[in-house]
Length: 77
Image 1 (tube, rainbow, N blue to C red):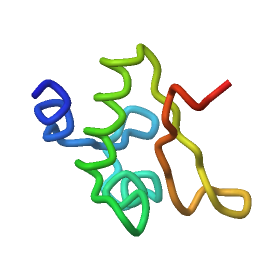
Image 2: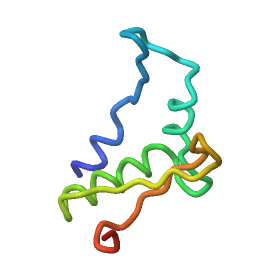
Image 3: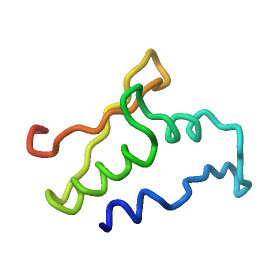
């Protein structure tokens, strides 16, 4: 329930104190990978944070991340 509520909050990007609508990070958080929406991704992160105390994200891509994937905290060393 907490994860769902937190994931439903809008995510915005600010640069130098100014809200930026067309920022690569905003697009990446809206659609982090081909299998999840932004809300599903964040809900999973918040769920891991609540149950395991940690949440991990892997950025995939050449140089700048093109995809974000959540990692199971129990499998991260």
